[in-house]
Image: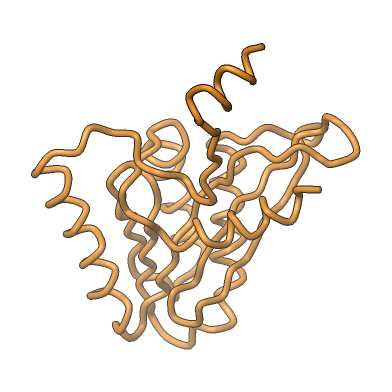
Length: 181
């Protein structure tokens, strides 16, 4: 009965967006900060001696043949437009700051082969205090800089929540679409 009234009488339908969309109240300051955030990425991209990457944790995907949660942290390397997916299942571990910090360390270790001299690392990520903006991520960055002499600085620039239209959105929607029957 609900479906009949909802769909036929009111002609309403549910829509599932392909990417995350902003659900925040939009005001002039919010739009100005969003524009500045996008402009910073454009300014950083042509810099030499910079590892420039964007990372984000995808929403939890359920394995098609069961109720097992699959986690995916994507790192998008802006210089080459390459995406690396770090995938694990919920039985192995969680999806908190420890896991994200470990993956960022793995990613930076993998970029070492590309670096021949001192390099700055610039990350763009979302504004999640629990996963990116905390003392553990600072410790990971400090450890990485002490371990690898080729890294001069690690800078994490936080994007405006929900409005930055970051590069991972397209990759995430491709993955999510492939799970649909």
